[in-house]
Image (cartoon, rainbow, N blue to C red; front, side, top):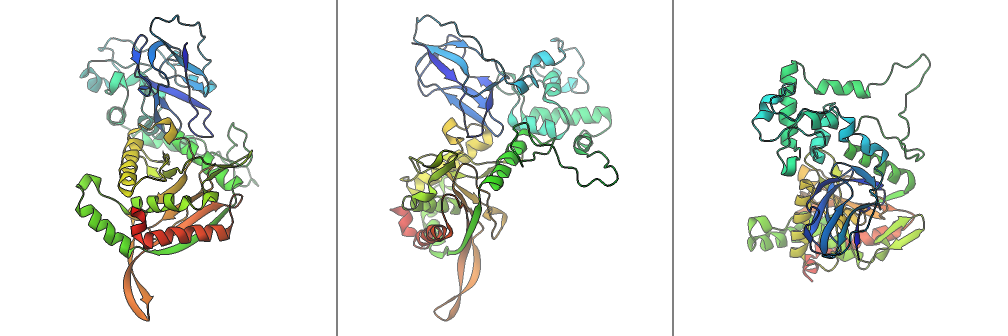
Length: 444
């Protein structure tokens, strides 16, 4: 029986996605769990795995087309099975924003001049394609420079797999394009966001609400897709989730010493970070504080079946994503460190899996590497909380009537008052502190 390949919903507010690249072609053998396509959301590029083994019988959605979640984008059948007649889904309205048919055709012959980018492109074997896939980072760079994705596709030959336009491609093209025009590209950006002159007596002009119609949420025009997603989700969080905050100071002296001893036995690339200690402590504390391991949704407070912890990762092109580490509750400290390292790397490379961008997971955000002492995080819907940790700092503290120097770290809980209250938050943070101040508990 044929198995539908569905555009997955990766995140509670995801409504559509784009097929960036098909890794399997019609007629190719497919194994369950094998990556068959790359799907781009507004915040990340995610690897789509096959749920059944068989043959990639049909590809219904070509690369570069945006379709709503839940639509069938391909079919997997058993070898020799008849292929059912399934219509291709209707693209999303904004999917036509950069498809090929809305872009002026580009002559296929390499000698055709393409502004100032031609010298760079003729050195390559391929020519620009109006349907060439563009990486999320390259899209953001183009939009920040005031250049449409369609113009990029029409003028840039991608050097990535199957002609994919990468960050390096767009940066080289922008540099040569700006030099040929004798004027920088970036100064075009203010024209997109510059407000019109107010009439006498007018107050501050507020941007129109987004098309989603969510009352009270304002997404400024001209933002790159990832920044739009951050604006929507964080505005929604502050609008709908009544935040409360609990801050504790944690003595990390013993934890830092234990970490140093562990790292002496590990290779440099496998060492444990302070953030790994925090993630492990949070996952351990969640096992006994289940009210924080929930999602807050319209239908109620929904317990999570596993302990998932998400980590904030700054992307190379600017912006922030918080992929999840699923079912990390029983992972050892070394396993937690390895999974965190792998997840962060793949998040920056745009190779996340669907279950890692589901949006579910108590969040850990760490700015300690920037020598930040403390800050507060905004809860990522639909989760019930997040913890923000600063740097570990040598600090004078009073102990037994004496002033000594201890390695102190500030940690602040942001929690949704609909799911928990301040007393529960205090107990939860005290448990995290207890675990970190007795670091042998991280090894149990």
